[in-house]
Length: 485
View 1 (cartoon, rainbow, N blue to C red):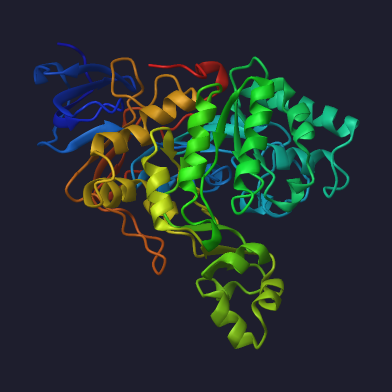
View 2 (spheres, rainbow, N blue to C red; view 1 turned 45 degrees about the vertical axis):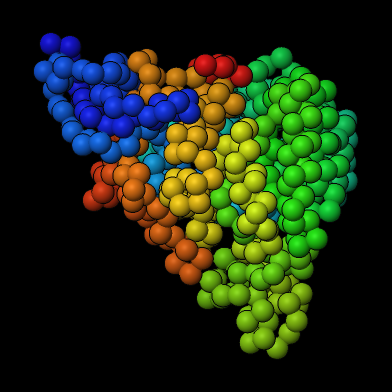
């Protein structure tokens, strides 16, 4: 007897490498994959016949804002229901730690509630995750905007030398605690005054650490190329890997420019370690802003503190009902969030198909009326873009959501179905998998996700959540950043 706890038998295995699928069995014991191939079922305590269903590594959501959700709603249903087994938090310059008691100014309020838990350090946040595990694994970035809010007396100026030194100390603490890198969000007001030199100096502790920088760049409209070049320059000076977050071209005037920006990625990749992620929709979502609403074809309000009853309604209709123009309505709704219909589908497809593009949901789990990407991003790639649009083979789609993500974020032992890897797995029906969440009905689990395993524990089935919470906090010390398989 082999002592296997579970044998998943007869699946069409897509192992995360992008290689063609093969019929294979996968054996699991002690939360890890112990054998892959044509295996004797007699060696397993339990056998589950997959009858030709697809078997893949659990999906890695490389761009999330789940920092607080992991603790406030540890079942993580929006993610496990679509096959996600690992999330990367702390994106766009905003992380829950080490905010402490500092005011959660927008956009930090997307992850930090006024009455929610606060953490002075990453060590405290990781300890809370260890004590109260969630249903998924997580790895974390420390947010530059959060560092500014924690250390600066005013955010409308570059940081002083003393403030930079204080932020550097917090970065060192985060890295020592296990953060896999840092993120920036110069698009947003609290960090827009930060210069490239400030960011480079604050993130100096990343040098030589194997950590990375994920950047929500300063502009994704007319000045997208200079904004990309600024981010590339910071990472190059520090000698670290660069991820451009949720790459997009916003506003009708910029439709079609993905050919230009992807050519810039091609050029940069010849001399630096750069990559990108995107979400599979032509609409973005963040805090409600006049500039974004001004270039969007339409704007859907997702939450409003003073007017919560208006969530789920279009800004134009709200303004008409209030008898004011859109700008005045925006002011009356603050603080608030919104979905902006501002991108070209052809650009979305071109970016998604780019070889170095990973998939991230960028879902905002605390919105009253969230973008459907929160519940549907990954099955949408599998169903709509791979199966229906035939943008790429299903094996490539899986690669973009698993092995490529694990490689680029340095998540050793994740993202592949190989002996020794963590038993993070998803079983799905390749003919039926699809997103069901829509802009009109955004909270809706995907269809075709048959079973999800996190560290060997079955966490989701076609019948729903099992209640398992087998996720772990993945610390940088236990990873191999930049590793190639």
